Every structure is written in C-alpha cells, then in structure tokens.
Length: 225
Image 1 (cartoon, rainbow, N blue to C red):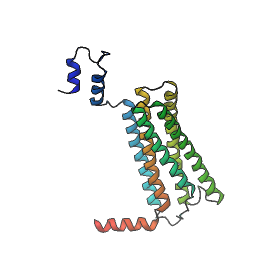
Image 2: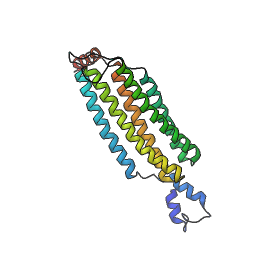
Image 3: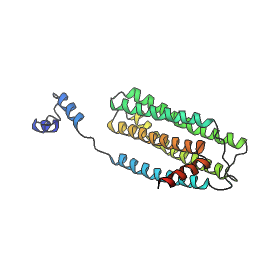
Image 4: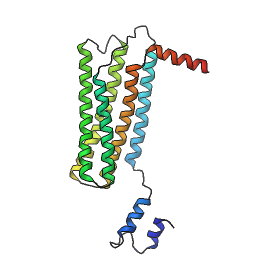
C-alpha cells in the first residue's frame, strides 16, 4: 500500500494537525504535476532551439562565399561566458534552496543570478564596442554580420529571461516562500541552462568554426555515405 492509499484510508489525515509526518510522506511520494507554465516554457525552448538551429545552418552555408572574411572574436566573450555560467549555477542553487524552504538563501541567490544576467548584457555591448572600435561593423563582411545577428538574438532571449526573472524576484521578495515562487525559480534556472547551452554553441561557432573545417566535415560526411 502506497502513501496515497494510507492517506485515503485515514480519517481526514490530510488535514489533521496531529499527523504532519504522514502528510510529509505523502508529499514526498506524490508525483509532481507539470504546470501550464512549465509546459509552456518547454514549448518555447523547443521553438527557440529550432530558430537558432536555422540561423546556425545559414551561418555555416554562408561561410562558403568568396566574400567571407573571418573576424577575431573579442576577449570580452570569455567574460560574458563566465557570467552566464555563474548565473546558471546560481539560479540552480536558488531553486534547490527554495525547494528546501531556505528562503533567505534562495532570495540572495536569485538576485545574484539576475545580476549576472544584467552584467552579461553589459559585457556583450562592450564586445560590440570593441569590434566597432577596430572598424568591424555589421555591413560589408558576412562574418561580422552573422556575429552581430547571432549575439543580438541571444541577447534578446536573455533580456526576455530577465523579464521573467523580475516577476519571480518580485514574488520572492514580496510574497515570501510559496510553492508557486519555488516553481518560478526552478523555471528561471531551467531557462538559464538553455541560454547557457545555446551560448556555448554560438561561441564555438563564431570563434572556432572556419570554412576549412566545414569543408573537412562535409567531406568526411560525404565519404561516410
């Protein structure tokens, strides 16, 4: 007999104040329901993944053009990567603290994670300024055009995540510790993991993917067929 059956067999055990231990057992064994917000986030992640995949495919195909001239990636991208990693890890820790009802720690970690995201946007703009200072602009060279396009797309997704983070942080600071706030923190962490994964792929593409490497990969694929 599982915990749910025990609860049903008990007269009002779910609401009786004298049996908190039984209630905790039931809550630990009950399978959590997926909320509409969580499902919606998965759908959005799927759509965004498809969008980034299409742009990366266009990036790879455009590299074969005779007017393609690789650009040197600014060192600021390493700093922005570190900030995104820190934000993802911090929000995951905030989610864990919220699940354990350690709300003071959860709020602090949530604020730190948001600050890392804001700093990420600032460093990305700094990287753009560094490129423009050496006359690497968005027109004239398709490599530069794609760099600005891909990083801008990712930055817009980070800004969108900050909107959701703001709603979550407001609820955490005002409403205190609730199951809904804990769920929102977990969703923020999930989205930041997605942003980090996308950024690593983009950083690798703009930093190390070359026309020669693409031709080599395509050549190997052709032989394998």
